[in-house]
Image (cartoon, rainbow, N blue to C red; front, side):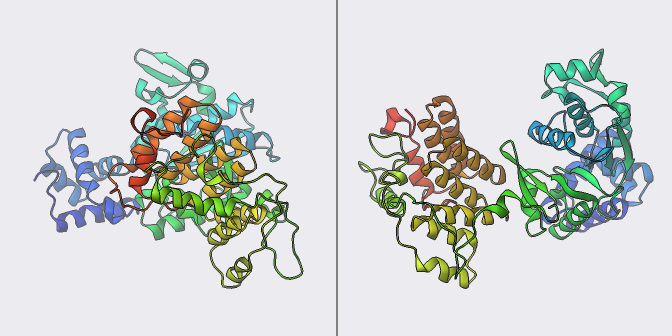
Amino acid sequence: MSEDVLDDATLARVEDVLQSACGVTLARSLRRSLETALGRAARSRGLEPDAFLRKLLVREAAAVECFIEHAVIGETYFFRHPEHLRTLARLAQTHPAPCFQVWSAGCASGEEPYSIAMALMAEGLPEGRFRVLATDVSGRALQRARDGVYGPWSLRRIEPEQEKRFLVANGDDYSVIPQVQRAVEFRRHNLAVDPPPFMGLGAIFCRNVLIYFPTELAREVLKRFISALAPGGLLFVSPAEVPLTNGLGLETVDAEGSVALRVPVPGAVTPEARLPRLRTGRNQVASPVPPAGWPQALDDSRARRARGVEGRPSLSEPGTSRPAWAASTPDAATPAAPRSVAVDALAAEEVPPLERAIIAARAGHFEEAEALAREAAKALVPEAYLLLSMVAEVRGDLNGAVEAVRKALYLEPRLALGHATLVALYGRMERPEDAERARQNALRALDGLDDEHPLRGVETMTAGGLRQALAPVEQAGWLGVR
């Protein structure tokens, strides 16, 4: 047998072993990864793949345990997503309970839960003021985690100050100091079938685990997480897993440009709840005088892209540092555009908030557009954050505009128009290095797309049109970065 030619029947038997042993069912698109895991497991035991497969199919305990480790344990390292750890530390400092409890679910070899403990200690939380519970389905992975000994590869992202404070060198390896080890408790736990080990948790980390589950199972696990979190508790998942939480009643929280999820506090008025909602009937919310030219400017920018500025599309109006869609926006003294009857009609027809937000923006009702875009953002729609960025830019809040785009890119890292928006914003902020980095990211996001491929975003643009707009200045007179 070769590790890359398992027939479907054998593959199904291997997957059944995995299901029976740990309750995990890989998504269909990931089933073939079991072949690679089988080969790695065989090599780790010094066996040929055929010999290891025979042991696995008769469910020899050692072979099954070894296979689980290679099939479900992903790569990890210290201080992965440090913005999540800093957000956690801020929450812990204001937590009223005697002990702030955090669950690292699917902790693998332990770098994540130790990083959590280190981050909390670095922010001044004393030993005994918090507790980290770390769980995994692999007993062997948990034993390595309890040992707390790691090679340089696990330390590749840790800051020197943290390494010096929390780790001790021992030859080529590094050991976690006893104070940190005492703050973390390791237990075996199967996310697919076991109930949460604790309730009333302040935070749960489960990153790059749910992507290996079918959607239905992932949603069930998420519901158990939510039940285990205290009101106001935070859930941290990977960007690819955030859409799985749609419709589960969680709030989004800014985590330094990325997204964390929060269980609502009953009766609390969130910033989103204080925003004005769609004006209907007798309960109308007064709107500030908006720049009335924006809707026409949006349509004009599409027309300019269709015919090209000097034969080609541009991210900026010629001779200015402003984005093309805002080029004809007058000053705030211009009277507000008449209210669009279509917005109210669409609300009655239950049109999605994002579509209503775009119509409100085109009508010049920016406060309403912002409120509707924030409502759409609760469903973790990247385009909603792009619209919020456009509103912020119209108001002159360039930092807020950048922050909104970063949230969109956290949800969809390959959102080409998001990266392109940053090019224009950084150009206006006179940050050429950041603008060039955003340009390169936008071009990478376009890799493999046909020129006629329509791009996701608030405005209409094709992959080919954006490629032309992103051409370097010396090649095509591009005005996005100066």
